[in-house]
Image (tube, rainbow, N blue to C red; front, side, top):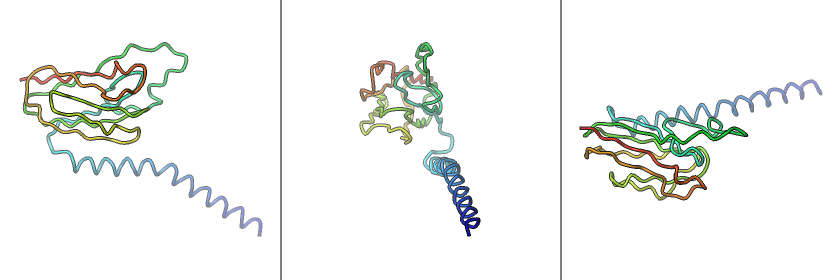
Length: 156
């Protein structure tokens, strides 16, 4: 009888491990499908990830990717996004650590609800003015909040 319980326990442990490992992949796949339905074909997509120490980072970045235990801090590189006038621009805004905000005043975009870690906020607009515009975090997110800036360049 004890051998049966041992195999049953092993089976439940194996099922639990499969669920724990498979769940994040399933959620990511589902999210990608949902996003693709929300994003117009031909739109210029950019992912911006907010990080308290490093500012806005271009691309999908996780907290462990920018963790710097005992290492000197690398200088913050503010991202530059380049598009052409008339382009539909979609920004996938993420946070790798704390709640961030976002504002691109020249496009009329101000997010006040916050960008929470693990969530994605989609922002879509048409780049209708030529020029160089600054986007930033509009929620005080830590001592390096001033680093939370980037540039949108719209070319003719």
